[in-house]
Image (cartoon, rainbow, N blue to C red):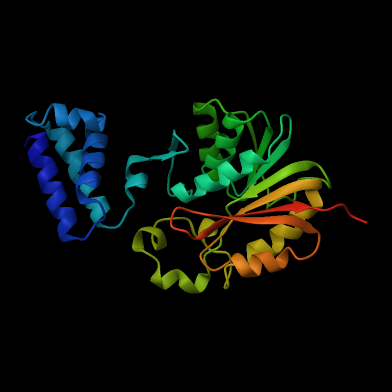
Length: 278
């Protein structure tokens, strides 16, 4: 079995099962089995696979055909130009979430205190820490997620302080300059219609924001106002139907509310600034 033949077989299997990007997925999974970069496959198409490499590749193909996301098979996902370790204990970082990082960086001044709420893999916190001179904190209620975030911060040499906590409960009043979060915002009622890769493999605690998908926003927004200094910023990633209700939650105590769309034109990031308390 050569590299070229293995790729053709994997691609056909994925096409038959309607797996997205069948050729690319086969390449990624074969590269992972060989412990090589994808470029190697093009440079050595006639190379024979060892028995061990074929066993690993076959297992990877089977797992993907069963619905397991490619990122959980390889244990890797690129985010903001860096490679992060991911496992089923954490949500797979999406390209759309890079908009949250970009928007946050626009509001961060040198020496600011920044908190990433619900950090998961640590992708947001690590990216902000490496792209700014802020003091970055990150919280999560999942100890398993915090272990992955700690590993990513260590591997990427990012100075992030990780804390096991529910939302912002561990911070005192008026102690932070910016709070960023990609909170769970999928309505629990949407669970049956989610893609199997999401529904069956990604952690529910990081996906579902209660029956309506708004429950975490309802808790986080007033708590963020408590811990932010006057003039501090709150930045939130939005779900497909959460803009209007979330904006309504900011009617009192917030100003300079802006919404940034993603590449698909959907509202993706909401930014709001605290106003001074009377």
